[in-house]
Image 1 (tube, rainbow, N blue to C red):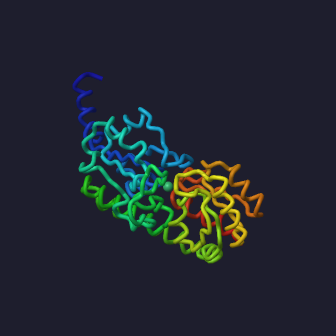
Image 2 (image 1 turned 180 degrees about the vertical axis):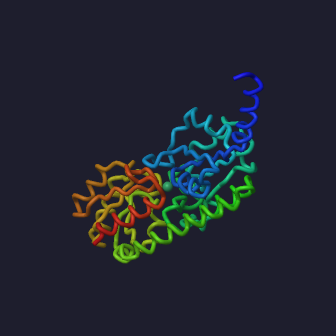
Image 3 (image 1 turned 30 degrees about the vertical axis):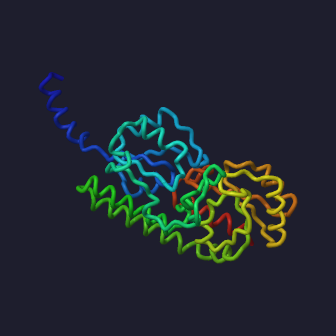
Amino acid sequence: MNVRQWIAVVGLVVPTVMQAQLKVVTSTTDLFDIASAVGGDKVKASHIGEGFQDPHFIEAKPSFVLQLRNADVWAFVGLELEIGWMPLLLDGARNPKIQLGGSGYVDVSKAMPVIDVPRGSVDRSMGDVHPLGNPHYWLDPENGRRIAKLFLAKFSELDPKNAAEYAANEKAFETKLGAAESAWQAQLATIKGKPVVAWHTSWNYFAEYTGMRIVAYMEPKPGVPPSPSHLLQVVQAVKASGAKVIIMEPFYDRKVADLVARQTGATVLILPPSVGGVPGITSYLQLMQHDVTELSTRVK
Ligand SMILES: [Zn+2]
């Protein structure tokens, strides 16, 4: 190929390449999946945390800084979920677009109705990792829709020429989610009112959605590991309520949950709180479906 031909080819290719997809980085796999659903092939999405990791405690790796350096959008859960690692990464990335005040800085919690907002002041040194309210809002499909709408608004603002496509993708996401919800109504009816134990307060939005009754938490406070005296109270709560299930995320210490199970006859149910939390759960829709279905078979 001579230079002229080469320029001709590059001239044809470059404009296509330059029509770059929006680079979207999310803190969690759940935001990633919904961003991908809304963005389709117009965005290039990636995520920092994995679904099997505790999102409160992600290790800030140098590769994440590189991932954020050229991002157009940084979407995170907020409410201090990422406070342990996000500031380091954003400082390192030196990307004004995704700093506070930048066009691509998306605190998703701003679009959510937040529950468990502490009354009065909460001292983080006491170990409570939810000082601004409960950040695990994605485990309610209504909030899944709010997340999708937020991505639709942001992507359309930054990339208006593809706004119609984003709108169509978002509508398709809502349609699929709505159909799935209709299909699992019987399971929800089974779960409603059933007593359960949860490890962390990550299941509070899910409890509002499903109607399950959380009678005790393995953690004395969000983020504080169970103590022997607290476990005694949990055992009593299980016995008093007849709870059959101890819901636990894949990243907590199963031995401790088993201890309570042995003393009460309840069983431990490992439920993923996020996409990728267990093998085979690769989308938000699958995650919700899996958690509703699994729980409904165990609380009967
Ligand atoms: Zn939490």
